[in-house]
Image (cartoon, rainbow, N blue to C red):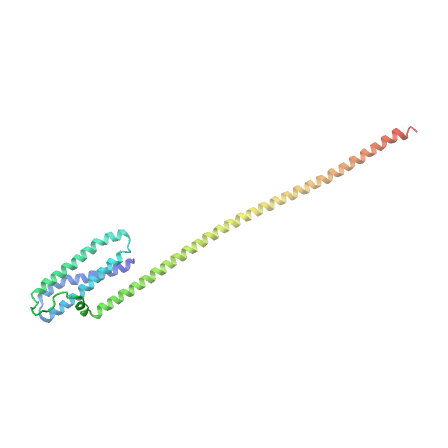
Length: 223
């Protein structure tokens, strides 16, 4: 529900309602063709006011609950006021009516439509155009809101992926550092193994030399 649309319609209704409240007194003070012309004008304005009131009540169906409660009493007051104005105008018209079978105030719907002038049609067309424009703007707002939500979700998802990539990068850096340390340890172990092999070879050679010297001294030197 568009608050601007409701307020615009409300302002038009109040203006029309104030005009209607002044018309019963004018009906009492005029006669002849002026009286009949004023009756037709009242008929037209009263019908337009009822239609505007119905449109406002329809607009309220989509309004927030608090606003509905605030305006419902006012709508009932307006509806009662239109009935009171209609009754006052009918009473003002009693003295003017003839016993010639003419139709009284507020005839059937086909007569009401017959007295409608282009201004009412223009008003209704303008209101329908305003409704269509409001609906179009509302759809644009919904699409923009949905697009904004999608964009925010994409940004959040990209942010999460960035964090994952940064954590993966940190793990790779740590892995690289661990591999570097492992290679250093392996090289140190390799050097120790080679050194141990050289020492073992030297010990073996020394032991063989000592064993050879002992055999020589024990067996060959006596002879």
